[in-house]
Image (cartoon, rainbow, N blue to C red; front, side):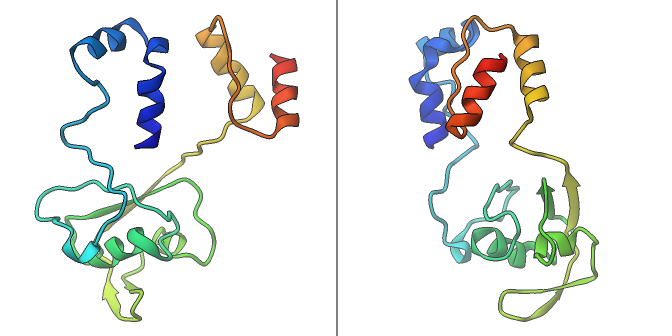
Length: 158
C-alpha cells in the first residue's frame, strides 16, 4: 500500500533493527496481511478467521457496510468502532447494541455480532505533540501534514 511504500522509501530513517532486517528481506511484507484495493464482497473468502479494516467507518455504505450486513447475524463475528461515530449513522446505532438492524436492502436482521468501541483519534493537539516530541527527543523534526499557518505556529513553538 501507499503508506508502506513511504516506510520502505525512508528505511534509512528506521532504527538499527529494521535497517538490518532490510538487508535480509522486506520487513514490511506481511504473510497474513493483504491490502485489498477493491473487493467483491459476494466472492470474498471468509471461511476462516478474518480481520478487515474497511471504510467508510460510519457503516453507511461501501465495503464496510456490505461486510457488516453479511456478518452481523453471526455471534462469532465482531465490529470494532474506532473513534467518533456520527449521530444517525449505523455505526452510532449499533453502539447501543440493538437486537435488530436494517440492511442496505431494507431487510431487518438480528444483530448477533459483538459490537465494541475504542476511543481513537489520528489527530493530536499541540500538548500531545509537544509531549511526544519531548519524550522522543529527536535531532530533527520534519512537519509534513497540516495547514501552512498551523505548521508555522507549531514550528515556532517547538
